Image 1 (cartoon, rainbow, N blue to C red):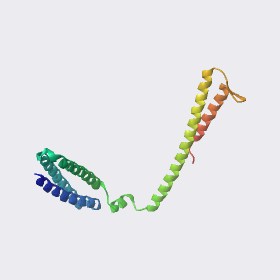
Image 2 (cartoon, rainbow, N blue to C red):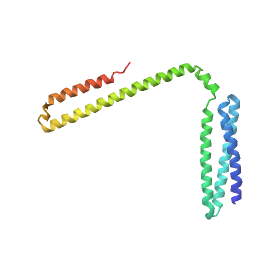
Image 3 (cartoon, rainbow, N blue to C red):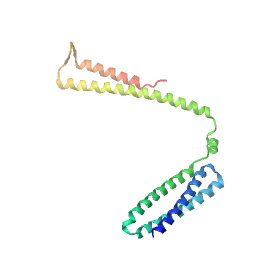
Length: 187
C-alpha cells in the first residue's frame, strides 16, 4: 500500500513542478495565450486535488503504526497545494512589465518626484505628531494639577510661589493655544 502512496507522491511532484513553471509564465503572457495557459493550469490543479484525495484514501488504508509518517507527508503536500493555488490566483491578476508600463506610463521622473514629495509629507506629519503628543502631555499634566488643587480646596504651595486656580486656568489657556498652533499645518 505504501508503494501506491509513493507513486502518488511522484505524480504529485511532477504535476506541481509543471504547474509552478506555468504559473511563473502566466504574468508574462497576454490575450489568448494567457487564457489558454490559465485554463491548462486550472485543469492540472484539479488533477492534483484528485491525486490528493487518492493519497488521503491510501493513508487511511495504511496500518496505524506507520500511518503517522504518511499523514504528516500528506499534510505538507496539502500545504504545498494551498501555496500553489494562492500563487496561481496572484499570477492570473499580475501584469507583465509591458502591460504595467502601458497602463501607468513610463515616466520614471514623475515617480521620483512623487516619492520625494511623499517623504517630505511624511516628515511633516511626524513633526506635527510629535508636537501634538507634547501638547497633549501638557494638557494632561495641567488637568492633573487642576484636579489636585480642586481636591485640596485651597491654593497649593510650591517653593516661594503660590499656584492658585487662576494660574492653573492660565496654564490651561496656554496649552489650548499651543494645541491650536500645532494643529495648523506647516506649508
